Image (cartoon, rainbow, N blue to C red; front, side):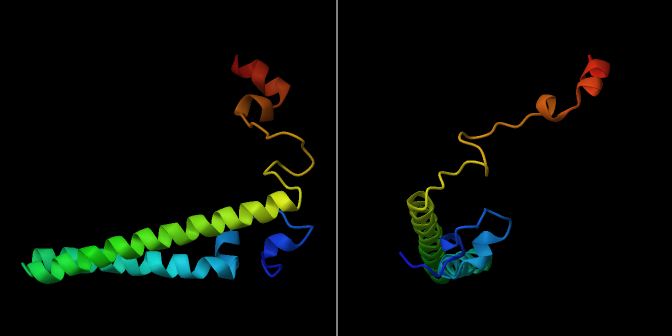
Length: 116
């Protein structure tokens, strides 16, 4: 496990955009993007009756999308192991258990009384 990811810092908390900030996710993201382009090529080849190219593009699409999703899942599990090794089990900061949020809890008591 490398200490170069943002999660290795002790003060780190999950934020929007962490997927893009981690360099180890880049191969999975690129493979998924190539898979989407391959899907477009597959549809064009199938629509223009180029059966051979359509089959080839379809196979490449499945390989790239599958490989990209697999790479992202592998990276997710690697990050999860780093988090657990640092004692962070996915709970909200300062809480010992996962937090469940609902509108009834967040709404002030006076407002709840008016809505009843």
